[in-house]
Image (cartoon, rainbow, N blue to C red; front, top):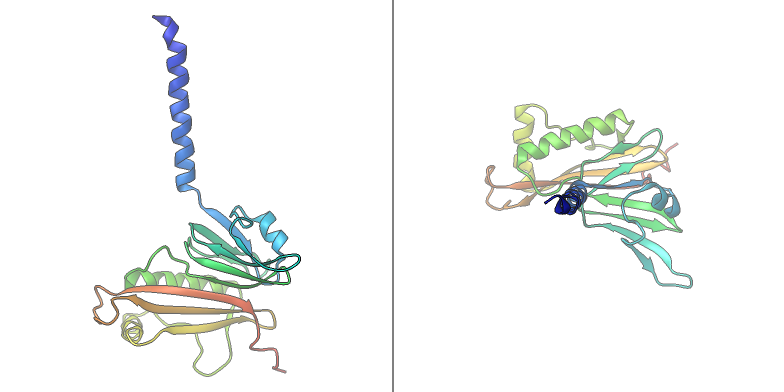
Amino acid sequence: MKSWRPALIISALLVLFLLGTLAYFKIRTDRLYVHIGKAYVEVVKDSTFPVVRKTALYPGNPPMVDSTWITSPAIITFDDPDHGFTLPKTIYGAVGYREDKVDGITTSPMLKALPFDQTVKLLNELQTTLRSSGWTPELVRGNDWIRASSGEEKQKLQMKLFDQVDRVTLLIPKKYSLLLHIKCYVRCDERNKNTARYLIDIGMGEDIFSKDES
């Protein structure tokens, strides 16, 4: 009777190992560490995201890196030492390159379109994070943090989003720019607060707005 016990124990351990491996890959979220101007080779080295496999090449002799595409769960960290931040998990994004350095980053820091209240909660958290990292609105008329704290502000924003996006341009002057958008994305034409769904989009690049300022 005892002769089968070692085989049974080994089989049980193998099953536990396989279950643990499956659970790991199910909950694992790859991380992408980028900032404008960062070298592609450094992005590859610092990230757990499969950058090489997910990067399209621009044909040439030799080929040049063109863009890295995010289509599976990932967390993006903008890893500037002074103005960095980490975004919530996403399944969409792209990193563009010019001369083997990061030139632009676009993403939606969400896994899906959400109801208004949940989207606004995320919006306020993002704005708080960016503000604490030193990002400030571009100094032009009509450009300011998106206001959605009070009940009245939220109501006005939701009605506006049925017709157009709301956005703010943020800067680290002479260094980076960030465009933050919130928009109605699903069932907007119905103008029904209960069924509409919303998205937040973020685009980052070099600061091209304040270069000519004295």
